[in-house]
Image 1 (tube, rainbow, N blue to C red):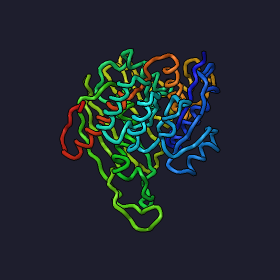
Image 2: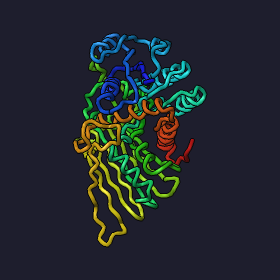
Image 3: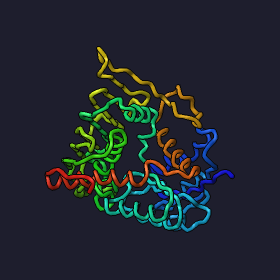
Image 4: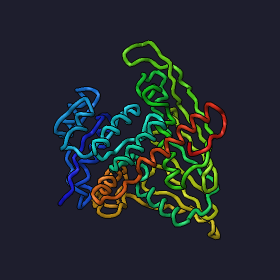
Length: 373
């Protein structure tokens, strides 16, 4: 019998539309798909946004309370695309109702909530996956293969940088991402999970962290008024880390990097090899074998070379940003269909949240903080 995935989406903002596009694309991109996908219900904070999900994407009904989705027998997956503060109640309600869950990063508002979410996930036995979409490009998967095969061998040091420029205008109005009571923090908790997970995915867990965070634009206008209010979240975060298996590294994330768009850069230097990658050039990465007589970086083309059942578009064509999200969703649905554990799971989400929280503690106390917390 063909598996049927009946989706209830919570949050129809930008990421909600990205996830919706992913579900709609699966039958085109993968032959055969892991099962039949049905967009059943969409929930949003406002009636206008929820209605848009029905009108744009064809969800069967809309609501403004996630419990309307959770209680439905005709929904078996809850997809959470809301601000961090609401992740825990949505996910816990869904898992206790027996729904499989897919959640945008970070897993929660703070580490305490993240651990509670994971506890409920283990208790209920549902399938759970967090969205670390950067893992799901052919370049990232090929780099992971090389690292696992020992191409780097012993890692000396690494560098991961994630840069945006969207908050550089001091007149950009306040939003939920600039309010600590909703977002839990600033650039570190908003952007940091991506480079933290990317480095951890490729190189392993961290031993300890030392961090500095800074708020440069300390006031912003309210959306509807000229009056300015205080900003209490960070614009920039710098992390120095030690790897459990040896080596040191550096992670930087900024929402004030002029000229940047979605610049995720990764470099790792080992005693046998080096790899370099820039997500703004997603169709290749560079690799160097230090054991060669004249070590030279080689350009490794990866394009859209996903493994079957990915059939569309052809692997020789360029990779786009949203393609990783589509493959992440496919990975989740396939794990459900084959009764396997999704990866990355909420346990990975907790590991990343530990680094974020340890970094905030380090920045406040101005000292190294050991991991795990």
